[in-house]
Image (cartoon, rainbow over all chains, first blue to last red; front, top):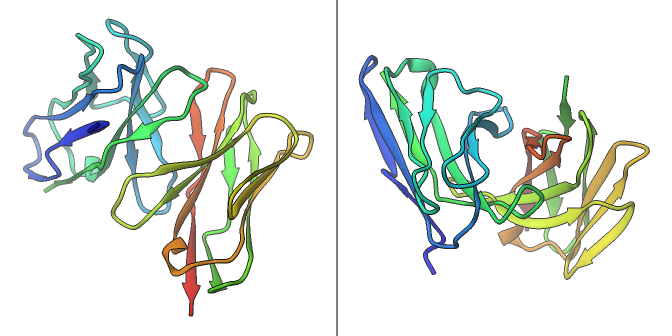
Length: 112
Length: 109
């Protein structure tokens, strides 16, 4: 079982460009999450989805958007990237709010 | 505000025991998780506590005191592969995980 797949693994992006980070899970989990991880800080929640068709804002949603058209996919879009969005982005999924979250391998994004 | 505190870095010797502490102040409490994260990799689940007391799982144990807002992760018989960051996270009243910055554990031979 693949679990959670994220793509791309890494990317260098020019400021002002748009980009979509892809996330796919094959565990049929209801909930999915996007986090960013920066040195010296804990994982911070960007957006989440408790079930297909619904999304919610996390702690740091500005500059990001998500969609959840089906159970498996949860893409994260940066409409106009800025250097402060340089980070490692992790996608995660769980069966429900109280359950263990399983993480993808991450996308390392540099915005120059 | 919500806050999770854990030491930034700890060093221990192979074969020894180490205790990593975590204190928290959150809006509500629905459980506390410990994750392990090797450098350049994804976090992986280690333990979950929702009631006070000790949960033991092989070489790893996790303790929770809700009245003190305190947890620790105990690692026994340390191995070189235990060198990693250990992340403490609390599930708040909205069922969102609030994460600490992580404790980098360095194991020396």
